[in-house]
Structures are given as structure tokens and as C-alpha cells.
Length: 179
Image (cartoon, rainbow, N blue to C red; front, top):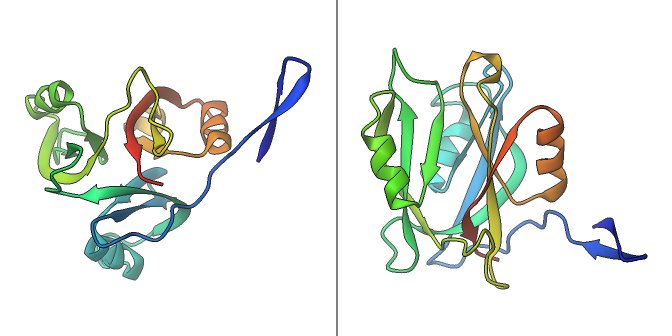
């Protein structure tokens, strides 16, 4: 919990809280960091997380401890999350996710990105906020630091603040996680 000054009284604002265990119709989106790339990545697929944990895909990915919960790809609830990877040889060595259909179509048309499919389903924020029973997931952009674009998706207010302090740009809440 972090204290935030407000109107003379301190108001407590809850910071990151790990999601509850996933129900059968839910997935935990696990965040990873690769120090050699200085990149963040997350996956909501248990098999992919297991491969990253084992160092099978690309060595060097470690869990950050930040996670959020979504619905599995194809669930009838929520919006489809498009997953992209930078096109080898011309695009960034990075992933990008969006549930915004217009943004998905625009990135699909960009030769620098390769569409990998639907990653998960999530609810959309309304006026940059989520309903009380959802958690806003904020997308940040590294502004090309280190020569490669990278996005990070967080629910932690303090970690978002730390990233902004390092020069990352807040793009805003882009979907709503489950509690």
C-alpha cells in the first residue's frame, strides 16, 4: 500500500496485488524479463510459460513476479487480444498485444510486425478505467530505448512510476484483468 496525499488526509491506494488462483476458465498472464535484451514479455499460455521457465525458447527469461489474470483465447466473454512479434530482419525483437480491433488491424497491416494470433480475451476499459471487479492493465512503451521497441503491461502503480522514472511512456489502460 502506498500513501497518497489528498485533501489534507492521507488516502491509501492499493498497489500491486497478485491475482487469485486461476479458475478453469481463466489464465494467469505471467511477466518475464530478459536482461540481455532489456525487454519485458508476458504470456497467458501455461505451456509457453513452462518453456520460458526451462530456458527452452530463448535463454535468459526470468519471471518478474508481476502477473495479471485474463480469460483464455476464444472465451466468449471479453475482446480478443491480438498478439504480434516484430518481423524478423526488419521489426523489433519484441511482442505487442492489443484488444482494440482498429489497432489490431493497423498493426496487422504494418510490415514491421507479424501477427501471431489471439493470445487471450479481456474486457476493455471504459474512459480509461475498469469496473470495480476488474484490474486496469496499463501499457508502457520504452520509446525505443536501447535501439529496440518494447512494451510492458502492468497493474502495479509503483512499478509504473518506476518505469516512467526510467524514461518509459504510459500509453494508458489497454485492457482489464480479472481479480
